[in-house]
Length: 146
Image (cartoon, rainbow, N blue to C red; front, side):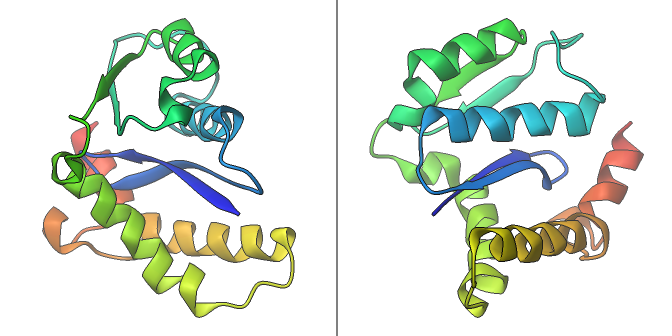
């Protein structure tokens, strides 16, 4: 199974996620669309362009994904190949659900995994204070930034 996450790097909020059997462009696209709905309430071109940063994986460089990104008025930025430290914040945030949720459960099915991961993401965004945010939650950081 592949877990695709979309993170607001300013607030550390996990905005979109998908858990699917394969890590294809459609998985990342679905996570991106969920993030846009979460942040803006609907799909469509965003009012002001913002940056989507990722590694150079085939999923993020595929025609399907890059076309989708452009259709929403977003701009893509890729880290330098073989330099994961340029994406350190994202790599760290991705490590957190793996350590605190995924690796601690024995999932019976994809549905079970989605429920447990969804519950954990809600806790992460709304109840778990973050040291990097001055001990407030990502949801509160977004409220304060708005």
